[in-house]
Length: 425
Length: 121
Image (tube, rainbow over all chains, first blue to last red; front, side, top):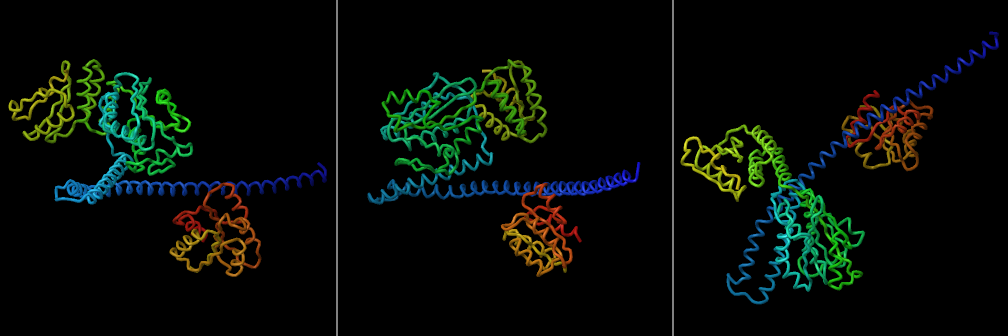
């Protein structure tokens, strides 16, 4: 290597060294930046979590507040209603025509106020997850016929027609009867409010995996912009109601909550698409669908077999550690379906038995299976306790024959092996 | 504490929160400015020990203010903390390269900021 080469080499070496130093600083800076960013993200995440907790707590407080206030409002309202209606009925002395007219207005608005409070209570219960469905097997067609009877006077007085179209003469599934009636009342009530000519149609159709129900009307329809807002609570949108009951803006939010609790779906269509019978009904009634496209509210309910339903209710009760409810559901299952699936029964019996621990006066103490019956043994230390057990069994399983012979087992309570000895019909 | 602080931030709300928490933490000499220009003037007037800079301001970004402060001659070298509401790795690097001593998130309790300041002294 000559001098020049050596010099160049050294120069190159120094240059590289310098570049290396610069890169080192850059790398250190990058590292610093990522560390700072990481720290910041961690802090922000914690802050977000804290805020989220606070919000959740606030939301819960809000729900509790609504439910508390609603309860407080309900009680005095009942007294007011009773007093006003007594005056109106002339029980407290004669009234003039004008007085009666004003009292009637009072009464109407008291009822409206009560509906609002009831709705507020309902929505706060749904939002707080405090509603427990009382599901049993019912026929939807029969239920809808009942609705037709209820609504016909109001529908006819508006000059409308009310139709029912059911896919089969009997559509049986498991649901909470009162709650589904409430949904139908909301939907039919709405249709009635917004329809001034034509008809209201209820359809019930059994599909592969669920049952599709709909309430459609021949009203002015809902504009596309308003459709997404329909199920939001307190939502007012561009449909002008006719005379009659004023709404609370909560009915559809409550209906949605109820259907979701049933693991079903609810949606709105304007103009109606899903209820195929709607168009035929329009033609039959000679309606102009251009000016009155109509609206349909459609909801689905899951189709259950007895076995699916009871499996679900037994598991639900077990999850909530309600061993007695689970035992009753199992008894009910046996009553409805017999003891065909022995392994399933044994499995549930073991599960329930495992939850039986305490021995308080009126408690399920044993569940077992013998021949073709499931039997539950309740221990009670006195007659009062026994009466309680019988009352409970009767309320949960009203159509069962309950055999009791209390006097025969006065010391050790009694053996409801005897009591529910004939679960098979 | 005898350390003088200058806060340069355009958000009234954020400034108020920072002043409140820093005062509570024992800093009683606090000056504020609402944009970059005003901030530099205040800096020359007050000669603070600590500068707290917001990233986004109407007339400039915090990194530029930071660079300018570092280029000023005739002042003691202040500690500079750049704060932000939205953390970002690219911004963190820019903060470092413009000569900031720390880069931290704004929170409702100013804890990260106080920690950063305490670590600098």
